[in-house]
Length: 69
Image (tube, rainbow, N blue to C red; front, side):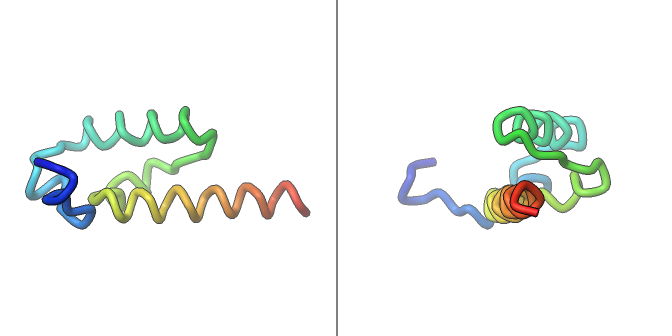
C-alpha cells in the first residue's frame, strides 16, 4: 500500500481483518494520544480510518466545549 493507493474508507474489520481485540487496542492508543474518553460501545463504530478521524475530531470539539463552559 502506498499513499496514492491508501483508502481511508477501507473497512478495517471486513477488508483488513482487524478483530475486536485490535479495535480495543486502537481505541486505547487513541485515548492515550488525544486524551479523550472512548466508550466501549463506540469501538464497533471505529471501523475505518475516516470514521476514526471523525470520531477523534468530534471528541476533541466536545472536550474543548466542556472546557469553555
